[in-house]
Length: 339
Ligand code: PLP
Ligand code: COI
Image 1 (cartoon, protein in one colour):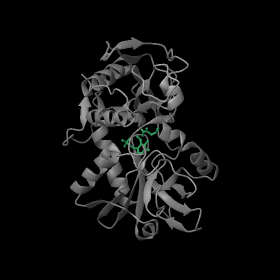
Image 2 (cartoon, rainbow, N blue to C red):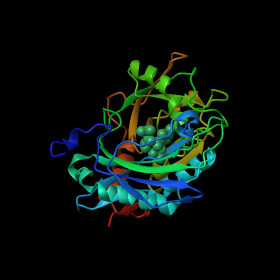
Image 3 (tube, protein in one colour):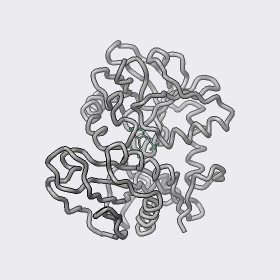
Image 4 (cartoon, rainbow, N blue to C red):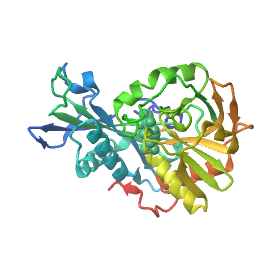
């Protein structure tokens, strides 16, 4: 613990002291339990293991210059876990239980919240899994809701520097009417092969197209995608992308910066009309996109020629981070300050 180099953290797992657990059994949630084990005793026929009955969330806690710990958009993450659970017939934790568990997990691991100067954060991972033994494809009647935390640095090694992404039409991360719009484990399993091909080619992520017509932009690996042209912030509308809480926040910030914010279907070819592009998400924050290569057509779309982020990405990034770390006022009520 004493040897953690906070400024050099990457986005990976480091053990912390405690996690928080709650079980749904006999039609009700039990008491919140605190555990110091990193393992879960699990029946080998549990529905999460065989049939992917699993949903998760991702949010962050930040330590400010004032020493206070701020959790970003706790309510939104609580609500999204409810829609994810409903999509695959799981018992969702109530909003209150979700918040209580997150606050408790952060509080118990306060010493792992990276210091302000490091630019790192405490990543919070709520997890919901079906635990009942089943061999038929049916939903479990028992669930474990668990929250663990781990200190993290930037998701992409480059940090706030442009990275390149690739379009690979032979892969989809989600089906047109499937589970792309909720945060369930199966979507991520489905993205592993394409992600590995992209990484082997030196790209940070795959820019997925809509799985139905392969004409429109969807999202970018484990992040949403946005573009900027003049005074316009454009982000794809689609049934198969996850509604990113970071993107929602950036849309609000862009609007308040006087930009016109548009969520609409975006044709791949329109990439040529934009000046800046970025990936956004809890883990990715804003990760500016330098170039997009369309592996099937051979076309490239360049957004950064000098290896630096564009001015709008830069401004949005600093405003978002300013609110998260408490350097800017929380005028939207996005932040929960830990008591
Ligand atoms: N899209 C996918 C597939 C993700 O996994 C994430 C990460 O949570 C996002 C988008 C960004 O969402 P958020 O900003 O809520 O973290
Ligand atoms: C997040 O941004 O919170 C994510 O969940 C992305 C990824 C690590 C799965």
